[in-house]
Image 1 (cartoon, rainbow, N blue to C red):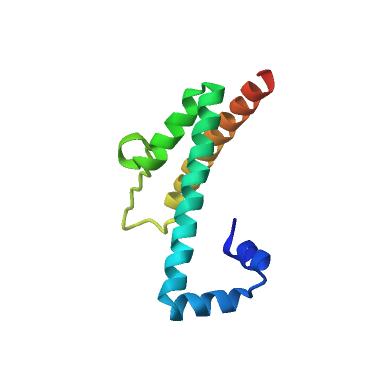
Image 2 (tube, rainbow, N blue to C red):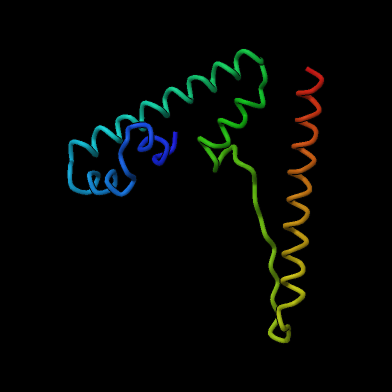
Length: 119
C-alpha cells in the first residue's frame, strides 16, 4: 500500500505523516518496521504464486531483481561520436536501439500473455 493510501486509511494527512517522520524517531521506526513487514509479506505471496504455478520464469525474475549484475538483463548502448557530426546520426542510432529494445520487450510480453491464456 502506498504512503498516501496508508495515511488515508489512518485518517492522517500526508503532510502530517511526513512531519511526524521528521520529528519523531519512534514513529519513524514503526513506519520502517511496517514497510519491512509488508515487503516480507509481498515476497512470501509472490513466492507462493511462483511455486503454485511451477513456473521457472518467476524465479528467474526474482534472481534478476535480487542479483542484477549476475542475472539481470544486459543493457548496452553503443555510441560512436565524431567531431564532424552534428549529433543527429548518433541520436537516430540511439533511438533505433531503444526501439529495438522496446519491440523485444513487447514481443516477450505478448508471448507471456499467450502462454497465460493457454494455461
